[in-house]
Length: 329
Image (cartoon, rainbow, N blue to C red; front, side):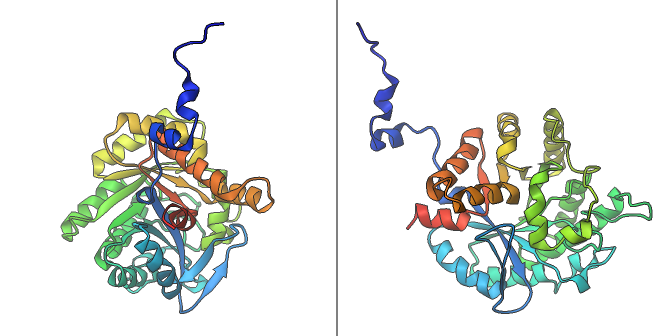
């Protein structure tokens, strides 16, 4: 029997040649670490729905960040855990210049000026009802009223020193209004990472527990403003609109169930495409790991390289701290 001259297995025969012929590579530069910040000092809290992930006060977070930054971690995304006394119908605490996020940004940038700090621009941690927008008496999300609040929130983050503001609310037109406001307050270099394709997903549950909005949201839905999981072409429209309004980068959320959206976005737009490996994805994977069904390091790295293969430029993942240490021990 005559064998073919081309044997694809030749390029799989050793780890060295597999590395050489790999089409995609995962590095620390691809990672953004989402972190939950608490008010106070020397505080940590375990998140039951996300084993291995903690809420931290900013001093504890800094102690964790410094060695990770030395190993190459370049970026974090801050998500606040707001005390109930600060939650109101109008979410006014969101743009308090002395609020938790604003103070945390100043502290982190003072200690680690080269670390990229991304802030979440959304009202759900601050609203008494857990929605991402301001509502009327009928429970309707008021798009244009909400945008005014988001603009004040984004400006306060930029003025505190945030490198990137990330509107994750999915209100129509908010990117353009935020970009205009940032230019007006001379925050020209503050980038906008728009959650342009954010789906009304069931995979967000653990995150809502982590930031304390799940109880406020109750059985309410976000389907009137977040995207229908059945739709793909609509995501391309959303992304195009946000780029036209001034978004510098775009986000697809969730991640692994939406790799097709990532691939479509990367093929059509010449901006960095980010993906959020969300809390529900983390919880599923970590549960399998903790039960011995999967080996942690190879399973996590495989999951993340799938994002790269789909075209992702940066990945928000709760594994970023662990992966940083695996890649740069």
